[in-house]
Image 1: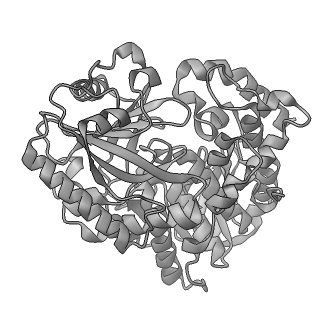
Image 2: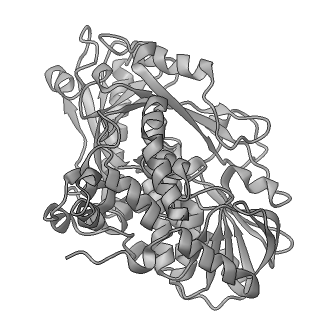
Image 3: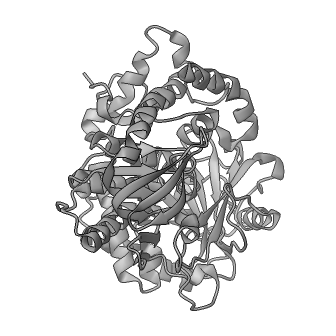
Length: 513
Protein backbone atom coordinates (compact mmCIF):
# COMPACT_ATOMS: atom_id res chain seq x y z
CA UNK A 1 0.00 0.00 0.00
CA UNK A 2 1.38 3.42 -0.94
CA UNK A 3 1.46 5.98 1.87
CA UNK A 4 -0.39 9.29 1.62
CA UNK A 5 1.71 12.31 0.56
CA UNK A 6 1.81 13.74 4.11
CA UNK A 7 4.63 16.24 4.65
CA UNK A 8 5.38 16.54 0.95
CA UNK A 9 1.94 17.93 0.07
CA UNK A 10 1.90 21.50 -1.23
CA UNK A 11 -1.42 23.34 -1.35
CA UNK A 12 -3.02 26.70 -0.70
CA UNK A 13 -3.65 25.99 2.99
CA UNK A 14 -0.02 25.08 3.68
CA UNK A 15 1.20 28.13 1.80
CA UNK A 16 -1.02 30.44 3.88
CA UNK A 17 0.09 28.85 7.16
CA UNK A 18 3.81 28.96 6.42
CA UNK A 19 3.67 32.42 4.89
CA UNK A 20 1.95 33.82 7.98
CA UNK A 21 4.70 32.46 10.28
CA UNK A 22 7.67 33.56 8.15
CA UNK A 23 7.99 37.30 8.99
CA UNK A 24 8.59 36.59 12.68
CA UNK A 25 11.46 34.15 12.14
CA UNK A 26 15.06 34.05 10.95
CA UNK A 27 15.70 31.14 8.59
CA UNK A 28 19.12 29.67 7.92
CA UNK A 29 18.75 29.85 4.14
CA UNK A 30 16.48 31.90 1.90
CA UNK A 31 16.38 30.59 -1.68
CA UNK A 32 15.06 32.88 -4.43
CA UNK A 33 13.80 31.02 -7.49
CA UNK A 34 11.98 27.70 -7.72
CA UNK A 35 13.21 26.24 -10.94
CA UNK A 36 15.22 23.03 -10.82
CA UNK A 37 18.30 24.64 -9.25
CA UNK A 38 16.39 26.69 -6.68
CA UNK A 39 14.19 23.77 -5.65
CA UNK A 40 17.35 21.65 -5.57
CA UNK A 41 19.05 24.18 -3.27
CA UNK A 42 16.02 24.13 -0.95
CA UNK A 43 16.19 20.33 -0.77
CA UNK A 44 19.96 20.33 -0.33
CA UNK A 45 19.89 22.84 2.54
CA UNK A 46 16.86 21.31 4.28
CA UNK A 47 18.30 17.81 4.10
CA UNK A 48 21.49 19.10 5.79
CA UNK A 49 19.45 20.18 8.79
CA UNK A 50 19.09 23.87 7.92
CA UNK A 51 15.84 25.82 8.12
CA UNK A 52 14.82 26.95 4.64
CA UNK A 53 12.38 29.27 2.95
CA UNK A 54 12.25 29.13 -0.86
CA UNK A 55 10.27 31.72 -2.82
CA UNK A 56 9.32 32.37 -6.43
CA UNK A 57 7.53 35.33 -7.96
CA UNK A 58 5.38 32.99 -10.04
CA UNK A 59 5.20 29.19 -9.76
CA UNK A 60 7.32 26.09 -9.62
CA UNK A 61 9.21 25.66 -12.93
CA UNK A 62 7.79 28.91 -14.28
CA UNK A 63 10.99 29.86 -16.12
CA UNK A 64 13.65 27.95 -18.03
CA UNK A 65 13.07 24.65 -16.23
CA UNK A 66 9.83 24.00 -18.13
CA UNK A 67 11.14 24.89 -21.59
CA UNK A 68 13.92 22.32 -21.97
CA UNK A 69 14.22 19.43 -24.44
CA UNK A 70 13.18 17.13 -21.57
CA UNK A 71 16.54 15.38 -21.90
CA UNK A 72 18.95 14.32 -19.17
CA UNK A 73 22.17 14.59 -21.13
CA UNK A 74 25.25 12.47 -20.61
CA UNK A 75 27.57 15.26 -21.72
CA UNK A 76 28.76 13.92 -25.08
CA UNK A 77 28.51 17.39 -26.63
CA UNK A 78 30.84 18.78 -23.96
CA UNK A 79 33.29 15.91 -24.41
CA UNK A 80 33.51 16.75 -28.12
CA UNK A 81 34.41 20.36 -27.27
CA UNK A 82 37.10 19.35 -24.77
CA UNK A 83 35.09 20.12 -21.62
CA UNK A 84 35.86 16.75 -20.05
CA UNK A 85 34.96 17.84 -16.52
CA UNK A 86 31.54 19.13 -17.62
CA UNK A 87 30.90 15.94 -19.61
CA UNK A 88 31.81 13.70 -16.69
CA UNK A 89 29.71 15.72 -14.25
CA UNK A 90 26.73 15.44 -16.62
CA UNK A 91 27.19 11.68 -16.97
CA UNK A 92 27.38 11.21 -13.22
CA UNK A 93 24.25 13.28 -12.59
CA UNK A 94 22.40 11.45 -15.37
CA UNK A 95 23.23 8.14 -13.71
CA UNK A 96 22.09 9.42 -10.32
CA UNK A 97 18.70 10.44 -11.70
CA UNK A 98 18.25 7.26 -13.74
CA UNK A 99 19.14 4.80 -11.00
CA UNK A 100 18.59 6.42 -7.60
CA UNK A 101 16.79 9.73 -7.23
CA UNK A 102 14.20 9.75 -10.03
CA UNK A 103 13.90 6.40 -11.87
CA UNK A 104 10.15 7.03 -12.13
CA UNK A 105 10.67 10.25 -14.10
CA UNK A 106 13.82 9.51 -16.12
CA UNK A 107 14.13 6.69 -18.65
CA UNK A 108 16.47 5.68 -21.45
CA UNK A 109 15.60 7.26 -24.80
CA UNK A 110 16.91 5.83 -28.10
CA UNK A 111 18.14 8.24 -30.76
CA UNK A 112 18.84 7.54 -34.42
CA UNK A 113 21.38 9.59 -36.33
CA UNK A 114 20.55 8.87 -40.00
CA UNK A 115 23.50 8.48 -42.35
CA UNK A 116 22.19 10.41 -45.34
CA UNK A 117 24.02 12.05 -48.23
CA UNK A 118 24.19 15.14 -45.98
CA UNK A 119 26.51 13.20 -43.64
CA UNK A 120 29.89 12.53 -45.33
CA UNK A 121 31.52 9.23 -44.45
CA UNK A 122 34.31 11.01 -42.58
CA UNK A 123 31.73 12.76 -40.41
CA UNK A 124 29.98 9.44 -39.83
CA UNK A 125 33.26 7.91 -38.62
CA UNK A 126 33.83 10.81 -36.25
CA UNK A 127 30.26 10.54 -34.95
CA UNK A 128 30.67 6.80 -34.38
CA UNK A 129 33.86 7.46 -32.43
CA UNK A 130 32.00 10.05 -30.40
CA UNK A 131 29.32 7.52 -29.50
CA UNK A 132 32.02 5.07 -28.38
CA UNK A 133 33.40 7.86 -26.19
CA UNK A 134 29.89 8.37 -24.82
CA UNK A 135 29.72 4.68 -23.92
CA UNK A 136 33.04 5.01 -22.12
CA UNK A 137 31.74 8.06 -20.29
CA UNK A 138 28.67 6.11 -19.16
CA UNK A 139 30.90 3.34 -17.80
CA UNK A 140 33.17 5.83 -16.06
CA UNK A 141 30.15 7.40 -14.38
CA UNK A 142 29.07 3.97 -13.10
CA UNK A 143 25.77 3.81 -15.00
CA UNK A 144 24.90 0.18 -15.85
CA UNK A 145 23.90 -0.92 -19.36
CA UNK A 146 20.60 -2.13 -17.89
CA UNK A 147 19.75 1.54 -17.31
CA UNK A 148 21.34 2.91 -20.49
CA UNK A 149 22.20 0.54 -23.38
CA UNK A 150 25.32 0.97 -25.49
CA UNK A 151 25.36 2.55 -28.94
CA UNK A 152 25.56 0.58 -32.21
CA UNK A 153 25.39 0.86 -36.00
CA UNK A 154 22.05 0.23 -37.73
CA UNK A 155 21.34 -0.99 -41.24
CA UNK A 156 19.13 1.10 -43.50
CA UNK A 157 16.20 -1.25 -42.82
CA UNK A 158 16.69 -1.00 -39.05
CA UNK A 159 17.00 2.78 -39.29
CA UNK A 160 13.68 3.10 -41.12
CA UNK A 161 12.01 0.73 -38.70
CA UNK A 162 13.07 2.98 -35.81
CA UNK A 163 12.40 6.25 -37.64
CA UNK A 164 9.96 5.60 -40.52
CA UNK A 165 9.61 9.28 -41.49
CA UNK A 166 13.19 9.48 -42.80
CA UNK A 167 13.93 9.96 -46.49
CA UNK A 168 14.85 6.64 -48.06
CA UNK A 169 16.90 7.88 -51.03
CA UNK A 170 20.60 7.61 -50.25
CA UNK A 171 20.11 6.35 -46.68
CA UNK A 172 23.19 4.26 -45.73
CA UNK A 173 21.96 3.26 -42.29
CA UNK A 174 22.11 5.00 -38.95
CA UNK A 175 23.82 5.28 -35.59
CA UNK A 176 21.78 4.29 -32.54
CA UNK A 177 22.59 5.90 -29.19
CA UNK A 178 20.82 6.33 -25.86
CA UNK A 179 20.41 9.20 -23.43
CA UNK A 180 18.18 10.04 -20.50
CA UNK A 181 14.70 11.47 -21.10
CA UNK A 182 12.33 13.05 -18.62
CA UNK A 183 8.64 12.33 -18.61
CA UNK A 184 8.37 16.10 -18.03
CA UNK A 185 10.88 18.69 -16.85
CA UNK A 186 8.29 20.64 -14.83
CA UNK A 187 7.26 17.41 -13.08
CA UNK A 188 10.89 16.91 -12.04
CA UNK A 189 10.90 20.39 -10.45
CA UNK A 190 7.62 19.64 -8.68
CA UNK A 191 9.07 16.41 -7.28
CA UNK A 192 12.21 18.19 -6.07
CA UNK A 193 10.16 20.95 -4.39
CA UNK A 194 7.84 18.47 -2.69
CA UNK A 195 10.80 16.44 -1.48
CA UNK A 196 12.29 19.63 -0.04
CA UNK A 197 8.94 20.32 1.68
CA UNK A 198 9.01 16.84 3.17
CA UNK A 199 12.38 17.76 4.72
CA UNK A 200 10.90 20.90 6.25
CA UNK A 201 11.56 23.55 3.60
CA UNK A 202 8.88 26.19 3.12
CA UNK A 203 8.03 26.27 -0.58
CA UNK A 204 6.27 29.57 -1.28
CA UNK A 205 5.14 30.49 -4.78
CA UNK A 206 3.65 33.89 -5.76
CA UNK A 207 6.22 35.55 -3.47
CA UNK A 208 8.42 38.05 -5.29
CA UNK A 209 11.82 39.19 -4.02
CA UNK A 210 11.55 42.98 -4.39
CA UNK A 211 15.02 43.62 -2.95
CA UNK A 212 17.76 41.19 -1.97
CA UNK A 213 20.59 41.47 0.59
CA UNK A 214 22.96 39.11 2.35
CA UNK A 215 20.70 38.92 5.41
CA UNK A 216 17.34 38.50 3.72
CA UNK A 217 14.89 40.08 1.32
CA UNK A 218 11.94 42.39 0.99
CA UNK A 219 9.19 40.10 -0.33
CA UNK A 220 5.81 40.85 -1.86
CA UNK A 221 2.96 38.34 -1.71
CA UNK A 222 1.66 38.54 -5.27
CA UNK A 223 -1.70 37.15 -4.17
CA UNK A 224 -2.45 40.03 -1.78
CA UNK A 225 0.12 42.74 -2.56
CA UNK A 226 1.37 42.70 1.05
CA UNK A 227 5.10 43.33 1.50
CA UNK A 228 7.19 41.99 4.36
CA UNK A 229 10.79 41.25 5.26
CA UNK A 230 12.26 37.75 5.37
CA UNK A 231 15.34 37.54 7.55
CA UNK A 232 17.94 34.89 6.75
CA UNK A 233 21.45 33.93 7.77
CA UNK A 234 22.29 33.12 4.13
CA UNK A 235 20.69 33.93 0.79
CA UNK A 236 20.92 31.90 -2.44
CA UNK A 237 19.91 33.65 -5.66
CA UNK A 238 18.76 30.93 -8.07
CA UNK A 239 16.51 33.14 -10.18
CA UNK A 240 17.96 31.95 -13.50
CA UNK A 241 17.78 34.53 -16.29
CA UNK A 242 16.41 37.06 -13.78
CA UNK A 243 19.35 36.61 -11.36
CA UNK A 244 21.24 39.65 -12.64
CA UNK A 245 18.31 41.92 -11.81
CA UNK A 246 18.53 41.01 -8.13
CA UNK A 247 22.29 41.27 -7.51
CA UNK A 248 24.80 43.77 -8.88
CA UNK A 249 27.74 42.44 -10.83
CA UNK A 250 26.05 39.33 -12.30
CA UNK A 251 26.29 39.64 -16.09
CA UNK A 252 24.32 37.17 -18.17
CA UNK A 253 24.00 36.54 -21.91
CA UNK A 254 20.73 34.63 -22.22
CA UNK A 255 20.37 32.24 -25.12
CA UNK A 256 16.96 31.32 -26.56
CA UNK A 257 16.21 27.71 -27.42
CA UNK A 258 13.03 27.12 -29.44
CA UNK A 259 11.05 23.89 -29.95
CA UNK A 260 8.11 23.03 -32.15
CA UNK A 261 5.21 20.84 -31.01
CA UNK A 262 4.21 18.57 -33.91
CA UNK A 263 1.34 16.16 -34.51
CA UNK A 264 2.49 12.52 -34.12
CA UNK A 265 1.14 11.52 -37.56
CA UNK A 266 3.76 13.78 -39.17
CA UNK A 267 6.67 12.13 -37.31
CA UNK A 268 5.80 8.52 -36.47
CA UNK A 269 8.09 6.26 -34.48
CA UNK A 270 9.15 5.79 -30.86
CA UNK A 271 12.83 6.59 -31.36
CA UNK A 272 14.15 10.11 -31.27
CA UNK A 273 16.21 11.46 -34.14
CA UNK A 274 19.38 13.51 -34.36
CA UNK A 275 19.29 15.39 -37.66
CA UNK A 276 22.64 17.01 -38.61
CA UNK A 277 22.40 20.74 -39.25
CA UNK A 278 23.93 21.37 -42.71
CA UNK A 279 27.19 23.25 -42.61
CA UNK A 280 27.61 22.97 -38.82
CA UNK A 281 29.52 19.84 -37.87
CA UNK A 282 28.56 18.50 -34.47
CA UNK A 283 25.27 20.41 -34.26
CA UNK A 284 22.02 18.47 -34.49
CA UNK A 285 18.31 19.09 -34.57
CA UNK A 286 16.47 16.78 -32.17
CA UNK A 287 13.18 15.01 -32.78
CA UNK A 288 11.72 13.96 -29.41
CA UNK A 289 8.58 11.76 -29.24
CA UNK A 290 6.53 12.36 -26.09
CA UNK A 291 4.34 9.97 -24.14
CA UNK A 292 1.28 12.16 -24.67
CA UNK A 293 1.57 11.61 -28.43
CA UNK A 294 3.09 14.96 -29.28
CA UNK A 295 6.53 15.29 -30.82
CA UNK A 296 8.99 18.08 -29.97
CA UNK A 297 11.44 19.34 -32.58
CA UNK A 298 14.32 21.56 -31.49
CA UNK A 299 16.31 23.43 -30.79
CA UNK A 300 17.85 26.76 -31.61
CA UNK A 301 20.62 28.67 -29.87
CA UNK A 302 20.07 32.36 -30.48
CA UNK A 303 21.12 35.40 -28.42
CA UNK A 304 18.19 36.84 -26.45
CA UNK A 305 19.00 40.50 -26.10
CA UNK A 306 16.91 43.13 -24.34
CA UNK A 307 14.51 42.85 -21.39
CA UNK A 308 13.78 39.36 -20.04
CA UNK A 309 10.14 38.40 -20.69
CA UNK A 310 8.15 36.24 -18.28
CA UNK A 311 7.33 33.87 -21.15
CA UNK A 312 9.72 33.93 -24.14
CA UNK A 313 8.23 33.70 -27.61
CA UNK A 314 9.74 31.75 -30.53
CA UNK A 315 10.62 33.92 -33.52
CA UNK A 316 9.29 33.15 -37.03
CA UNK A 317 12.89 32.78 -38.21
CA UNK A 318 13.62 30.07 -35.64
CA UNK A 319 10.45 28.18 -36.53
CA UNK A 320 11.35 28.35 -40.22
CA UNK A 321 14.90 27.18 -39.52
CA UNK A 322 13.68 24.12 -37.63
CA UNK A 323 11.19 23.18 -40.36
CA UNK A 324 13.81 23.61 -43.09
CA UNK A 325 16.44 21.41 -41.40
CA UNK A 326 13.86 18.79 -40.52
CA UNK A 327 12.32 18.75 -44.00
CA UNK A 328 15.66 18.03 -45.67
CA UNK A 329 15.85 14.68 -43.84
CA UNK A 330 12.26 13.47 -44.25
CA UNK A 331 10.41 11.60 -46.99
CA UNK A 332 7.44 13.95 -46.51
CA UNK A 333 8.31 17.34 -44.97
CA UNK A 334 6.40 18.50 -41.90
CA UNK A 335 3.78 21.05 -42.97
CA UNK A 336 3.05 24.22 -40.99
CA UNK A 337 -0.43 22.76 -40.33
CA UNK A 338 1.23 19.85 -38.50
CA UNK A 339 2.82 22.28 -36.02
CA UNK A 340 0.29 22.66 -33.22
CA UNK A 341 2.47 24.68 -30.85
CA UNK A 342 5.90 26.11 -30.14
CA UNK A 343 7.82 27.14 -27.05
CA UNK A 344 11.05 28.88 -26.22
CA UNK A 345 13.27 28.93 -23.15
CA UNK A 346 16.12 31.20 -22.09
CA UNK A 347 19.38 29.69 -20.88
CA UNK A 348 20.99 31.75 -18.07
CA UNK A 349 24.54 31.71 -19.48
CA UNK A 350 27.26 33.67 -17.72
CA UNK A 351 28.77 36.48 -19.79
CA UNK A 352 32.52 35.90 -19.65
CA UNK A 353 33.30 38.78 -22.00
CA UNK A 354 34.87 36.38 -24.49
CA UNK A 355 32.69 37.45 -27.42
CA UNK A 356 31.28 35.09 -30.04
CA UNK A 357 27.78 33.67 -30.16
CA UNK A 358 25.85 32.17 -27.27
CA UNK A 359 26.42 28.69 -28.71
CA UNK A 360 30.11 29.20 -27.90
CA UNK A 361 29.55 30.04 -24.23
CA UNK A 362 30.43 27.36 -21.70
CA UNK A 363 27.61 25.40 -20.06
CA UNK A 364 29.65 25.23 -16.85
CA UNK A 365 27.77 26.64 -13.92
CA UNK A 366 29.18 29.39 -11.76
CA UNK A 367 28.66 30.25 -8.08
CA UNK A 368 29.27 33.93 -7.33
CA UNK A 369 29.23 35.66 -3.93
CA UNK A 370 28.39 39.38 -3.81
CA UNK A 371 30.01 41.88 -1.47
CA UNK A 372 27.16 41.63 0.99
CA UNK A 373 27.15 37.83 0.90
CA UNK A 374 24.37 36.87 -1.53
CA UNK A 375 25.32 33.61 -3.28
CA UNK A 376 24.21 33.51 -6.93
CA UNK A 377 24.25 30.32 -9.02
CA UNK A 378 23.93 30.63 -12.81
CA UNK A 379 24.79 28.74 -15.99
CA UNK A 380 24.73 24.97 -16.07
CA UNK A 381 21.84 22.88 -17.34
CA UNK A 382 18.88 20.87 -16.13
CA UNK A 383 20.84 17.62 -15.90
CA UNK A 384 23.28 19.03 -13.34
CA UNK A 385 20.75 20.91 -11.18
CA UNK A 386 21.61 18.79 -8.13
CA UNK A 387 25.34 19.53 -8.31
CA UNK A 388 24.65 23.23 -8.92
CA UNK A 389 22.46 23.30 -5.82
CA UNK A 390 25.11 21.49 -3.78
CA UNK A 391 27.80 23.98 -4.79
CA UNK A 392 25.54 26.94 -4.01
CA UNK A 393 24.65 25.66 -0.54
CA UNK A 394 28.31 24.80 0.13
CA UNK A 395 29.25 28.38 -0.73
CA UNK A 396 26.45 29.89 1.37
CA UNK A 397 27.26 27.73 4.39
CA UNK A 398 30.97 28.59 4.15
CA UNK A 399 30.39 32.32 3.64
CA UNK A 400 27.94 32.67 6.53
CA UNK A 401 29.36 30.06 8.92
CA UNK A 402 26.28 27.83 8.94
CA UNK A 403 26.43 24.54 10.80
CA UNK A 404 25.41 22.44 7.81
CA UNK A 405 25.87 18.70 7.51
CA UNK A 406 27.32 17.08 4.38
CA UNK A 407 25.36 17.03 1.14
CA UNK A 408 22.99 14.04 0.96
CA UNK A 409 20.96 14.70 -2.18
CA UNK A 410 22.70 12.13 -4.40
CA UNK A 411 21.13 9.47 -2.18
CA UNK A 412 17.70 11.00 -1.47
CA UNK A 413 14.93 9.58 -3.70
CA UNK A 414 12.53 12.23 -4.93
CA UNK A 415 8.82 11.98 -4.16
CA UNK A 416 7.38 9.01 -6.07
CA UNK A 417 10.73 7.30 -6.70
CA UNK A 418 10.94 3.52 -6.39
CA UNK A 419 12.95 0.69 -7.96
CA UNK A 420 11.72 -0.30 -11.45
CA UNK A 421 10.54 -3.74 -10.31
CA UNK A 422 8.34 -2.17 -7.65
CA UNK A 423 6.97 0.42 -10.08
CA UNK A 424 6.09 -2.38 -12.52
CA UNK A 425 3.92 -4.06 -9.87
CA UNK A 426 1.84 -1.01 -8.97
CA UNK A 427 -1.91 -1.28 -9.45
CA UNK A 428 -2.36 1.87 -11.54
CA UNK A 429 -2.39 2.90 -15.21
CA UNK A 430 1.14 2.84 -16.62
CA UNK A 431 0.95 6.44 -17.75
CA UNK A 432 0.36 7.53 -14.16
CA UNK A 433 3.23 5.35 -12.97
CA UNK A 434 5.59 6.99 -15.47
CA UNK A 435 4.62 10.47 -14.25
CA UNK A 436 3.88 9.95 -10.55
CA UNK A 437 5.81 6.82 -9.68
CA UNK A 438 4.84 5.21 -6.38
CA UNK A 439 2.05 7.76 -5.90
CA UNK A 440 0.19 6.56 -9.00
CA UNK A 441 -2.20 4.28 -7.03
CA UNK A 442 -3.26 7.29 -4.97
CA UNK A 443 -4.28 9.15 -8.12
CA UNK A 444 -6.07 6.07 -9.42
CA UNK A 445 -7.92 5.80 -6.09
CA UNK A 446 -9.51 9.21 -6.72
CA UNK A 447 -11.69 7.42 -9.25
CA UNK A 448 -13.26 5.19 -6.59
CA UNK A 449 -15.73 7.91 -5.55
CA UNK A 450 -15.79 9.76 -8.85
CA UNK A 451 -15.18 7.60 -11.96
CA UNK A 452 -14.96 10.77 -14.08
CA UNK A 453 -11.59 11.40 -12.43
CA UNK A 454 -10.14 8.59 -14.54
CA UNK A 455 -11.46 10.01 -17.81
CA UNK A 456 -9.37 12.24 -20.12
CA UNK A 457 -9.84 15.96 -19.52
CA UNK A 458 -9.57 16.65 -23.25
CA UNK A 459 -10.62 14.14 -25.92
CA UNK A 460 -7.55 12.75 -27.64
CA UNK A 461 -5.17 13.57 -24.78
CA UNK A 462 -4.26 11.07 -22.04
CA UNK A 463 -4.31 13.60 -19.15
CA UNK A 464 -6.88 12.47 -16.57
CA UNK A 465 -9.12 14.50 -14.29
CA UNK A 466 -7.33 12.95 -11.31
CA UNK A 467 -4.12 14.67 -12.40
CA UNK A 468 -5.73 18.09 -12.26
CA UNK A 469 -7.17 17.38 -8.82
CA UNK A 470 -3.82 16.05 -7.57
CA UNK A 471 -2.05 19.19 -8.79
CA UNK A 472 -4.31 21.37 -6.64
CA UNK A 473 -4.40 19.13 -3.56
CA UNK A 474 -0.76 18.05 -3.36
CA UNK A 475 1.45 19.87 -5.89
CA UNK A 476 0.94 23.51 -4.99
CA UNK A 477 -1.08 24.58 -8.03
CA UNK A 478 -2.87 27.80 -7.13
CA UNK A 479 -4.61 28.64 -10.41
CA UNK A 480 -5.57 27.16 -13.76
CA UNK A 481 -2.28 28.27 -15.32
CA UNK A 482 -0.30 26.28 -12.76
CA UNK A 483 -2.40 23.21 -13.52
CA UNK A 484 -2.43 23.41 -17.31
CA UNK A 485 0.93 24.98 -18.12
CA UNK A 486 3.24 23.34 -15.59
CA UNK A 487 1.72 20.37 -13.74
CA UNK A 488 0.19 18.70 -16.82
CA UNK A 489 1.57 20.64 -19.86
CA UNK A 490 -1.80 20.60 -21.59
CA UNK A 491 -1.18 24.27 -22.30
CA UNK A 492 1.55 23.62 -24.86
CA UNK A 493 -1.24 23.37 -27.45
CA UNK A 494 -3.57 26.36 -27.33
CA UNK A 495 -6.66 24.44 -28.48
CA UNK A 496 -6.16 21.77 -25.82
CA UNK A 497 -5.65 24.45 -23.16
CA UNK A 498 -8.89 26.15 -24.08
CA UNK A 499 -10.77 22.85 -23.90
CA UNK A 500 -9.35 21.98 -20.45
CA UNK A 501 -9.60 25.47 -18.95
CA UNK A 502 -13.13 25.16 -17.46
CA UNK A 503 -12.21 21.99 -15.54
CA UNK A 504 -8.98 23.52 -14.22
CA UNK A 505 -10.72 26.74 -13.18
CA UNK A 506 -13.46 24.82 -11.35
CA UNK A 507 -10.88 22.88 -9.33
CA UNK A 508 -8.82 25.91 -8.37
CA UNK A 509 -11.93 27.92 -7.44
CA UNK A 510 -13.00 25.08 -5.16
CA UNK A 511 -9.59 25.15 -3.43
CA UNK A 512 -10.03 28.82 -2.51
CA UNK A 513 -13.41 28.23 -0.95
